[in-house]
Image (tube, rainbow, N blue to C red; front, side, top):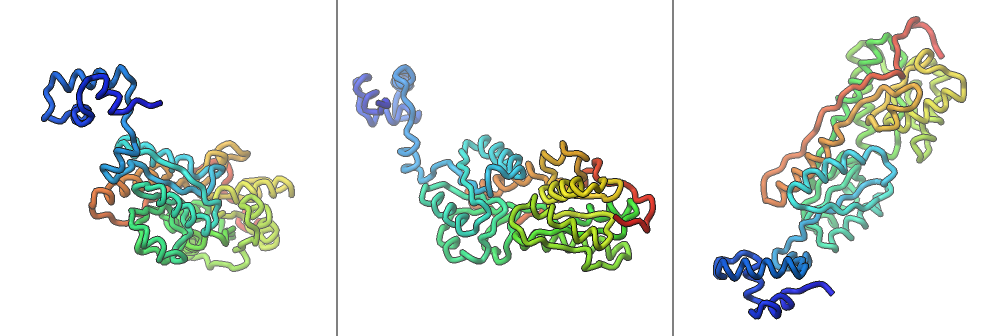
Length: 339
């Protein structure tokens, strides 16, 4: 059985109130008595009850964090960033998964709230306006990382700059001489997909290249790898020389399809991803991509959460992305060549 304050009081021959005050360093208890009781508590292996402390302080010193899935390589550094800041502030982080399902995401948020976490951080949120009334009733700080749904103005968010990142990707391809640049998008991330597609279009227009609908596709499949594999046929027909993909997993699927069709990357087709996940560094060829500041996203989200818990003003934040050039892109030798 765990050692209680009453056990210490019995061993010390004092009241449990005296023990409680001594363990907290209350000046009402003499220094000699405080030292004796604290030493006795250490010898007996006393550990303060987190439940009792949370009832007194109305804080659990825990943060609930909802991620898409533990298999998502994107979330690893995001979680690390959250935990670094949380641990420094003596908070624990509880992880739960939504599996990209808005209904399950809301159910997990409600479960964490019932567990009395002090705040909740949600990655790649899709709850948006679907559950505005429920979220409004939760009444604890909720911070979204890369919110993927409109209608969430009542929540706080930190996100990577999708438009700027997409512009970097397409500008890189244009500087390599590519004009027939395809966009391989995703239908299940409405907001971020629209922003990345906007960045794609903006970069083309700035270079005087008219966007071509024949070079844009959104394969109707749920898995990103399968989406990348399914997207190649359109680009074969449209004569693309380079493709910008919504994310790295789609890019990896596209590279797999290119290998199966005998298309050399980057000699015949340059490919750029988005996210800079770990697998993209080790595939062949190593993937040129847009790096989201994943560690910074996690840190900033937790910092915002702490500020909200301390009743400080918080503003939504957008963080810039960076281009990471590897081996999946190359200068186009013959601008008129097609796949």
